[in-house]
Amino acid sequence: MNLLHTADWHLGQTFYQYDRYNEHQYFLDNLLQIIEEQHTDVLLISGDVFDTANPAVASVKQFYHFLHQATERFPQLQIIAIAGNHDSPVRLEMPQPLLEDTQVHLVGYVKRNEQKEIDYKRLIIPLYEKEEVMAYCLAVPFLRLGDTPKNETTNPDYTQGVEAFYREITEKALAIAKGKPLIAMGHLHALGAELSDEDTAERPIIGGMEGFKPTSFPNALQYIALGHIHKAQALGGKAHIRYSGSPIPLSFSEKDYQHQVVAFSLEEGRVQDIKTVPIPLHTPMLSVPERPLPVKEVLNALASLPKGTTHTHTPAPYLEVKVLLNEPAPELKNSILKAIAHKHVRLARIDVRYQQQQNTTKETLQKEITLNDLQPYEVLQRVYQNKFQKELPEFYKPLFDEAMEKATD
Image 1 (cartoon, rainbow, N blue to C red):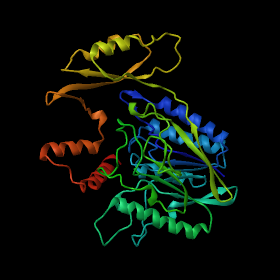
Image 2 (tube, rainbow, N blue to C red):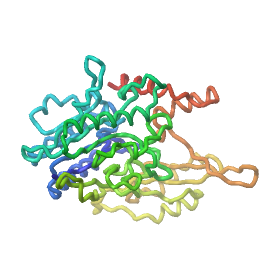
Image 3 (cartoon, rainbow, N blue to C red):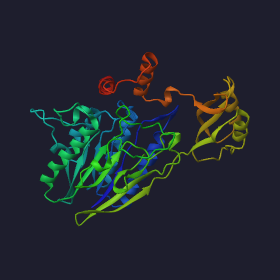
């Protein structure tokens, strides 16, 4: 049995003012080709299918069209997609009644029974090769604090709750599997996950908490397909605990990431042959210069960029311009636009930093923050800190998540 692990598609993302539909379609077309080449039996999509909880109609159609193409082209293919923190659990599961006669499983949220017990069996999905069950998948979506098992003896703790959830669902799955291999999915921020220095796209989900240890996953899980962190990597030196990474760069900090999917197989009841399959890049990202420089040097660097022609068929790269200023420069944007007027680039972002003196001897760079760089919860944190001169208490995070979910559903 051959499996393919991917995550963090973020369909519908607007990159500054630019729509990314064609880039995502290029990825999805390549994914279909990879499924064919790898003889894939099971496709695992580990969350953040969409960029927002209320995606545009075009993005929803794009996802459904992919499901239709995949199931029509590969009738035996099983597809399991879980919700990430960017997804609306209800919206992701909405078409599931129409998919009951297919091999597609969309898992948005954790359900409880009439006794308020977690319905783990709903999340334990058999994986078939022809008509034989070869393994079981633990399709765990992004967990909110209320989704985790209750601990009556201590105060609610998100990390401990996630650990308890995986422990309990694994125990349930072992009883069902009767020796068959277990594969798990998840969407979370694990301790030790590596990011670039400037990566702000996916911060710890729960108010600074990133304490879930990879070693906390039960040993019975033979492969753990994770989403949320956009940099592809194995965790804690364990080849079987992996972030597949995002298939396209979702910020300039990700432009040097290796974008890929992960392929592996099940043979004789064991996970084997874990390997990465690169995803071709549709539209490059370009930072000029690589570090902030004074305006004159920046304009000289822009002048050296290649010119665009009517015969240029490759997509124009997204351009980030990094500028170092001593004081505000009202004409900066016009100067940059003039410098790139005939260049084969698209201006996406001007990263302005100011050089300041500290203690008259030490120079530091202060980044100019815009709303485009911040997640909604970060805005709340900054407003609270500015008003009360102290950090926002962590108990506000679940309340904020609940309010955001209700506002976007």
